[in-house]
Image (cartoon, rainbow, N blue to C red; front, side):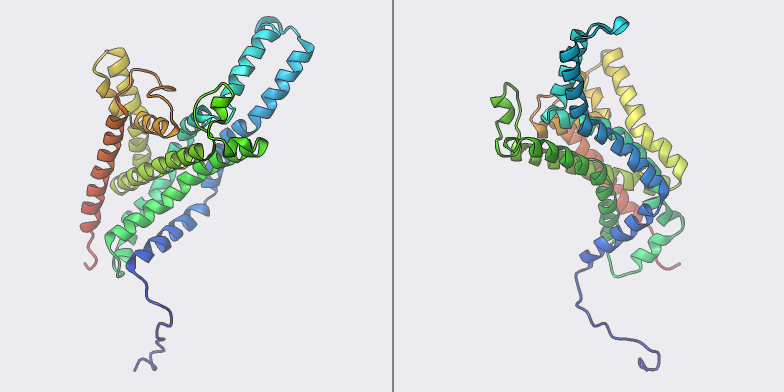
Length: 320
């Protein structure tokens, strides 16, 4: 009978259901990477990377020109004032821990906007058009589906943050090999903070933090809102409205500093600074809560999102 129906026996090796995480992520990435809108947003995200990448060369050239010519620039002030500004900018772009903290902070804006637009495409449409039923009808667990979607979003975030940051790290290592081999590179040159492998590990840890937290939060938000416009409104509120609210409560009304924990991106910044070896609140406005409190808040938000996702996928009817 199987021969008459033209069935073919499976010739490959059977794997664990956990292997299904990658195909789910691959399909989601394939759907996303075919959209011109994503590549447009990705190109905008690379503009900041190019500013950091070529900024050192441009500022060094401008400094040499001003040093040689010593020209006067009218209302903009004399060349000495401009030289001071250029030197301050060069101190930020020198490849230190501050360089990568500024890069991750500024890059976060375009990352948040990009995820808001792709969230419904990767997750929301599966629930709206009942594609989730197709996945869960297979011999996989609902957590395989959730992890597959999170993995797809993680790869997108890594493409926009960690990958350009590693390119910046490679640029400085290529310029001076001691930057890669000497962890005390900046300390030996009247600076501060680690270089070399410790800084590389810190960059990877910071990128992983952003990827894991944003992927879990986006999957939960997209499964709740589903449609693009409601998702964008809720997603932007989670970062921009809550930041404004936290600033009003702490800076405006002078309430307890713990109200700033509602600012999710500020919490990510505090924990990321600790990975890079910066002091608490070194590059963000004080006063700030403790780093462990920010980390606990992020862990709590992730736990709530995972509990909701478990409840949301459990309620899907496979047979109706």
